[in-house]
View (cartoon, each protein chain N blue to C red):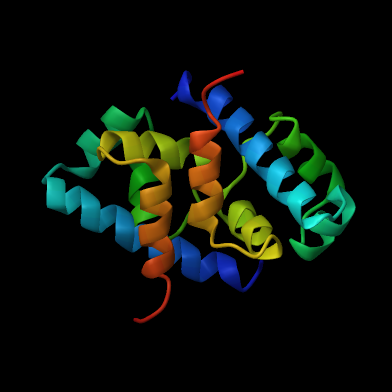
Length: 81
Length: 81
């Protein structure tokens, strides 16, 4: 797990930022709609925090997608630079 | 999120138990392979805890599937009784 976690957090960070900017909303708006703190969303987008399934579901809902699609995007974005 | 979390935890609990029993391994074996504590896996299977993305990835890996598939199974099992 120790090996998986950092890169998956980075993959999640990328996926989150990508989807949010596609929709054209700010971190603040996303946080509000997902019932999360703006600071936490900012940390997630920088790969500094690992989200809980609950947070993933809230963010995905705010982004108009099921949680599994956001996780798949995170796993796909896990590799590379 | 308050509304989403309990049912998604239950969906995850179901999905986890279902996949684990399909493979035919104990909670203890799953916990060992996922580098998690046996008590934590037991709590997840009873829907008492919400997993982190890191835990989901470790469990999915131990179950031989990508994390997103486990999350999808959790979301599909969210409804019903």
